[in-house]
Length: 160
Image (cartoon, rainbow, N blue to C red; front, side, top):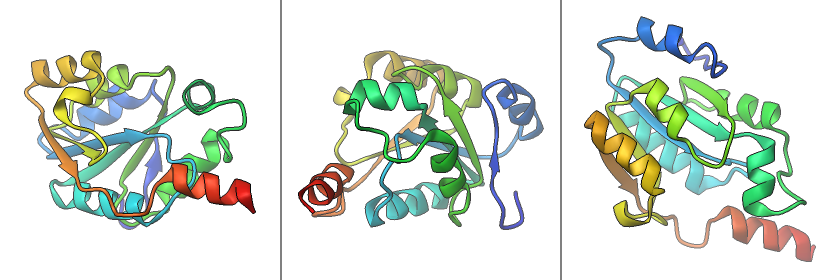
């Protein structure tokens, strides 16, 4: 789609871009992506392999602070978006507000949604899961990469 270059698309632009992509097999995922590690890359590569393009939603700074604490995010949302956009598997990146990705997912209308193995269908946010089910989205999970997590990286970094 992007000839080797991903694009950062604002929430306001999502409907227009989505319309241009009608007929494509869109795969979506979302997360904070604050401290990138190999588990993220492998999950993104897996997600991208399932469709024509991968659209990544990232939590805005305010929601990362609400989820992870006042010392996070380490990297501001614009930098996290830029880093993700530079990764080969990623085609589109959108920063979304709030704790839930529901509005992002409804706007993107993916064919497939991918989350990491630390989630199961039952542990997905109920509002997000209901929106995905109503749209008929296939939900897939990528197995965790043992010993690789943002929390582990953050704790190791804090210890010095």
